[in-house]
Image (cartoon, rainbow, N blue to C red; front, side, top):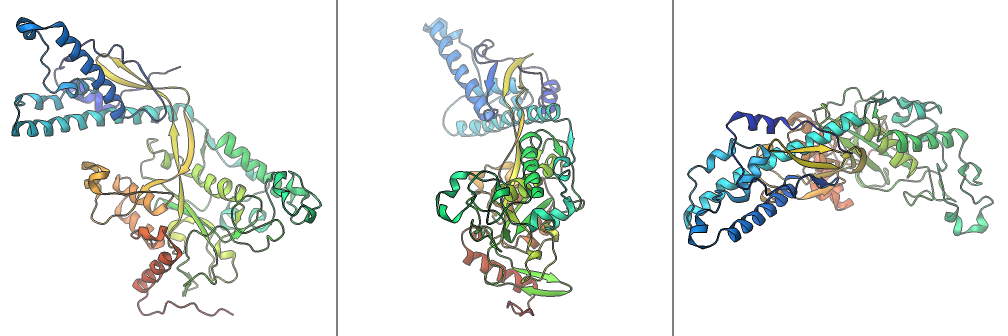
Length: 495
């Protein structure tokens, strides 16, 4: 089942840089390794716990076998305890040099030694984490070897540029892409047709084109989006911010529990509201949109990725897969969200429905999705080192993005040298700003890219925008006044 994966370079380099250091208990780990690891189990803390338990058992057996005054002299002396053996197995021979001369007494000296041990443990865990990441990257490279040109959906007549602009039949029509006959349980006397095929609906029948495109989108999601790398669609060539976003103003599909469209009234209905439009800039003029009277309910959802496209960062490698998932599958087919704010005649804008974030009008916030890879692992000891191997079950999955709420004065250097708890960072999922902040903390994007994102996601430094419309309205007004101090934040009357 398992294939050999290359040991992370950091482990191999460390192991060859100095003379080898022996394990305290040479045979203690034969019953632990090889160790089967599930898709969520390849992490350094988990593996260290296994080593630590085996070390304690070996120590107990050693003490039991060597009792009495003479026997105690034969007991194995292991300065550093389980951390020593873990460092040896992780290839951190260089880190073990600090053990020389470590105090063995109590009192203040033990605090000093604990600090040293903590550094060795952290270095060893980093080596194992790098091995897990490397095995995941190799699994992806070996499993996903083809690209996808969106051919299934374009074969049904969808023009990708038109679609992302918010045009074309997928955006302009009203009707369902799928439905469950059980959904007709209420007001059954209002319907002539009550079946699974939306093409026969009496109130809002779905066109043959939309129906065929919906099937193609479903097949792309099920059969291709997690097995092939999607090509870059037209219009996304220069996303300097490494962030893209879609914003919808209309719901075209009922019976999906999303948005305001229903079977008897689906004309000009709105999607689920998750943001506020702050203002637009159209033909050289500024148009503020305080409150929600004109914009009504809007929904924005995006994605972000790092600058490393080597394959280690799956969000970078598979960003166009995520764009497909966000725009066509999760929001169009599943929820029926269509048309951008530029299609609303009451809003002065000609922006696309989906685009690089720097080309979008300022909004308070947006939801977001990310791409992750999953695979099973096996940890073995080969030539005295822990080697992480991946299984043959690699697959891509889409999920709500995981980030951190913005916190001033926390830097990438702080993040690298401290724990999340020590820094007081709070996790924030399904929030594009928090996801971008996480990328910056991890050193995956530059300062200027964050600055660009903040110009559009005006709630980037204000996590409270996730809590209420009132907070979003305040944030929009503050951002508008900061950028246009001489203009009133008042909606302009449009003829």
